[in-house]
Length: 128
Image (cartoon, rainbow, N blue to C red; front, top):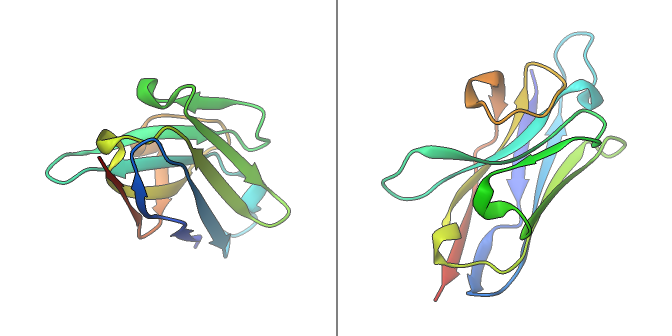
């Protein structure tokens, strides 16, 4: 069982930056953290949870939702078992609860059904 804990959320002014972190612990039997594809999703009030960014097991492949391209950067540290989401130029539409997730397989994917481990989420609020 993989446990994921997000941190780094908070209140930021429009145009500001935040860096989210996701710390992983535990592992499915025989499977190392470095073998999981990882992703960030977000859920705004009254809306469905949506894909934000994903990274492959090595960090060599990344995917971004369209509005995140050029503003957000996903990365991972397989030594410290952590994943990050650096966010710049934040705006009110980025306000949401952000979740990190670990996928069944090692590749980067935007499909939420591919993820079977989820964190509890961290709130990001962007004030205009």
